[in-house]
Image (cartoon, rainbow, N blue to C red; front, side, top):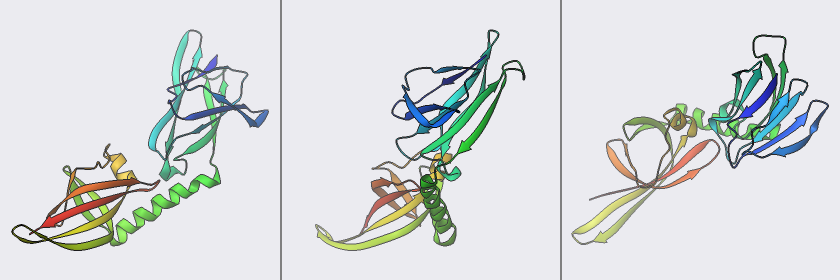
Length: 214
């Protein structure tokens, strides 16, 4: 029997170590399909290029006797405290089941809890002082962080406008399987805004909006 790692993502860093030397890691080429024997106790660390929300990092497949089966799928998710990186221990027990069983112990680096705290802070702000808006037919909770009013003299008279900056937790966008884009229209309080800019942080999207009216 053996352990096979599948669905490794290009652009992410994958590193492997053995249980006998769990702090000595060697990089794995994401284009490869690493296979380890049942005698291998594998410690695998994955690091993404940015904070993730439920993204699949890789799948662990067990093989034996000409049969194969997916035994575990590892994901990265900010709310779980491992949005950027996680390290897992795998060992295939050949005597249990047709394909064996996987033992996995997750380790989270303390430094990556910052992303989760940022996410939790944004969600709390949305529940306390947030409002709702409509983006492409979906209801999104947002927090207004700034507003700048302006007046411009244009043909036909004075044109009033204002810029608004909103923050919105990335989790809700991920749950809807979408993300905000520049140029899109967002409706809030009966008024339509154009999304002028989108800044992405680990916990939230910051939307720069423009509204003009006569």
